[in-house]
Length: 143
Ligand code: DQA
Image (cartoon, rainbow, N blue to C red; front, top):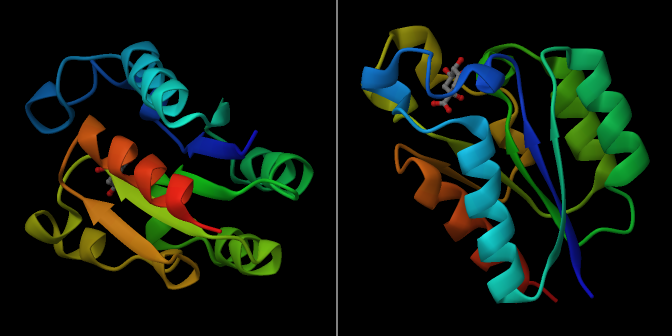
């Protein structure tokens, strides 16, 4: 069975409570349920991880991503500055889909730049939970 990893970065543990007018009222558990349901329908095995710490995310990816079919990652604010996460994603050499719940191009100027996106096959931004489902669909189709 194809396996994919899904990673949520800093502050995504606060989903549902954090700026609900931007990120919605559903929680990270709700998002992970959506991810698991979609993965099940696509016949994918999924490993989900959230951390507020850059190094923990890198450790997780180095350990869990090799041998997987790809990565769905919402790096949160790390997208805007983490060259260490960018290097990690590049080193893994796997298909990566970067997802943002909100449209990072329609918000503060600093959000429209993602340094990690360069390591991704594509970026889905602004489509909420549906972005994760679309990312899984893409990875399910990869050879
Ligand atoms: C986010 C957008 C980032 O700018 C922000 O720092 C987040 C969430 C999103 O999902 O829209 O934490 O990645």
